[in-house]
Image (spheres, rainbow, N blue to C red):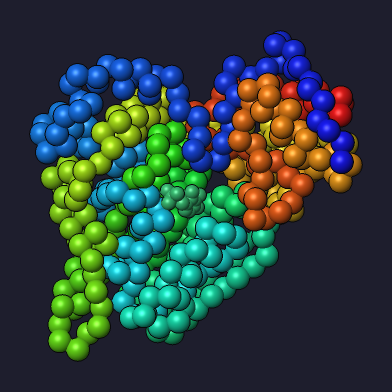
Length: 382
Ligand SMILES: *Cc1c(COP(=O)(O)O)cnc(C)c1O
């Protein structure tokens, strides 16, 4: 194998900010400035007191505006990130049996959690190959339909619309919006639960989960959790996995246990920034623009092509680009990193000769254009 020779990318084509991760993702300098501004008023102060509660309140109302919540929908949040929410959903939302669309690491992980929960029946799985998606299909006896809006491991975006017949049967639609929320269009009325972590499109830190809940989801959690205490029902809902406690705390602009105040500050700043700029429509248009710059560059390139064959399934937030065999992605990535352009690696377990680029709202489309120039510059010199 050839040893990487250092290539110095000219300053004139460098992006202003070299962070293109798919999560953690770029944190805007204004969010860091907000931390600075909260040095003595927020940081190191109690989350049970007004200043931090106001922060949580602002996040909740800001997200309600951003997602244009239908009547009765509510925003809940808690510690642990989307991964924790999978366990919450198993403990507090799925009554007996769930159906899953699985088409990559993240969508499969939730299905695995449900398969391993001893009090749930084996899930119905609707799987497809990496680079494609498959939605779950109507299945008798299923009370929750689950899939990921954006499969971060492959850069595939799936539609978010209820499975025909599911709502009439009383089943919930539970969508992992982790790398989609804030970047891809969504009609929340097509979901009962739309959950995500803030280290992707919201450009904050990991460790928190946020969930948009429909009245049906709230009612389901109440029913599941109360029946868990009845004689003969073998289900343990640990307090940390109780969606009803999370919601009760959220309604008071608090969290069950101590949150990262810094993360709340960054998240609040980002939600306000998105809303001030034009909300979901603005954010989704900006991501679509950045993504299309990358896809069209790849299509015109002699050595790169979009990994996802179906243009309609190509993500606007996480862009995956395959490189021809003679161009080693690892080499390109190493040189980019030496130049300060970071986190463009494909998902490790996917194992492809690939670049994966996060183009969340915080990323400047002009920086995306320069990124393509930098990649070309590096490849020309390999
Ligand atoms: C990142 C990601 C997760 C995991 O989020 P954590 O906050 O690390 O738990 C889950 N689902 C999707 C689609 C993701 O992109």
